Image (tube, rainbow, N blue to C red; front, side, top):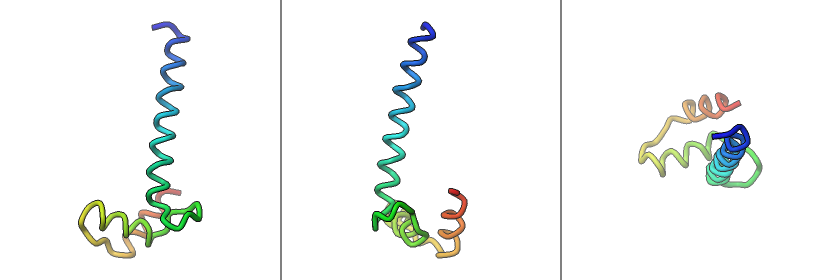
Length: 66
C-alpha cells in the first residue's frame, strides 16, 4: 500500500475509534455534564457487568481516566 493509502486508512481508523469513544462516553455520561462521575461509572458497571462495585473503587477508576 502506498503512503497515501496508508494515511487514508489511518484517518479512517482514527475516525472510527473517535466515534466509538464518543459513543461510549455518551453512554456513561448519564447527566450530560461532560464528565463521567464515580456514580455514573458505578451504575454502568452494575448494569453491564452485573456486579456492584464499591464506591471507592469507582472513584479510583474515575480518577485514573485523567
